Image (cartoon, rainbow, N blue to C red):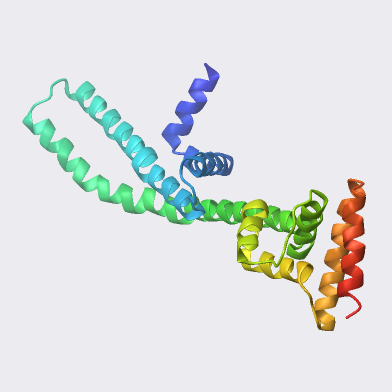
Length: 237
């Protein structure tokens, strides 16, 4: 009973749309549900959904309850409902509606609801970017992934004779990386190389260490041997 009274009080005072915990929960729920249903669903689209809910759900419901309560009071005090009462009710609605929309709901929307919503959206986006950055940092470089593929292919007897762009497409399907980058990495591994810049050698050296650590972790000796061969081939040019 106390919970019901609390909800009624919150509805009457129009408090719910401005509770930061409620806005955050609604934002996350709507965004996750629509992201599952529609690929590429954006944060801005979720923001627009919440803005629409504010006006079309909360404001309309509150206005409806406000005018319905007023009508009940008029009928209770007047005892009858005739054309004069109807005219008075309509006049009251026409006068009060713009005032409520612009001076009550509008100001609450722009000075309370919207700042909270934008803050929640920015924090959510920041967490997503941080998670993506951590995932990217945890991933091996493109060259290291190409080394892993090359070593596994060689161990399984798959001959890579002259890397071409088709290999880049296959590695994109396998690792989700840029096909041109994967093609260039595999070309360096599988084809003859005459010269590399010091900067490129430094990058390759780091990638070889990544691949070596991976193969040592899974105790894959053929992979470690491939890394050693590539180290001798590419780091002594």
